[in-house]
Length: 421
Image (cartoon, rainbow, N blue to C red; front, side, top):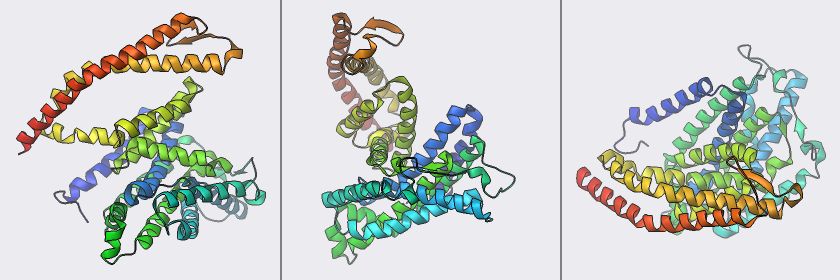
């Protein structure tokens, strides 16, 4: 079903733009680190979109979505080893299908149990299944390989167009192609009657049942489709890293996809894509800058949930009507006014966190440290006073400026309504 008011060309254009970006990205960011990061982004995009089929579309909060991601990765690795040992004429680009089928199979198995209930009960069942599979991975060494995992060699597969998939650039384009295909498929599902029924079950399952549909059947269908695409993401991860281990199945992996989906925004289709890109970028960059990068992730998640429930994409899309009406420029002075206090608050908070970590956790390495190129001793009182004053002063200034931002927003919104009317 096409959205009203949009022609077929208007629907195809964004996907053509996405394909052009995926093709051109390695031409702009040519370093090996950039290629690796973009490959991870592509995998996380598929994983986050599959999770959003559960949470954003159907309203099912799962704490164990990594089960299907990890099982897809393990089955893909075993399939790669089998194909390589028997010299079967199966090319590497088809291997994510194995991960998808594995995710679908276990989605049917576990979904038949967990989707009988929704809400908190479903969340607890998903957590129990995750712990069960994660514990089992340490017992079944023949399949999961214990702590070392199972390795594979993607270059031993059948070559297509003389592509060995040894260079990272070839792996990136493989991941990008699957990312685009899965993105189109998952978006198409949201436009079908099944997608609309998933939204209805999320909002009011009793009314859906009154209309003659079985909510549990709709939930298990969405669950299985979500597991299928999560398995594809796991297969892509197995191809990228050439290994699958128990970390793929853990609660940490489920937490990462939950963070990415929420930070990007569960209310829109583009939200998980934005969240996957942001979370991957922060994981790679922050981990090189600080040892407490996971704490910053948690604080970012809390801030998004408290102050921007729609996520980053929701915040951006709020400005759409203002941009179309030509009134968005009225927000710029207020935003610039709030930028300074916010930067001051952020800098002070980061300084306090880093100094506390140095003194409480890394005291054995000494208290001498540096932030933004400024050396100081965290054992002295002056750095704490300066950082505290920056955080407290920035917070007070931001609180004083927020009414100005609110007034500017209402003014721009009222002007946009008059223009569009």
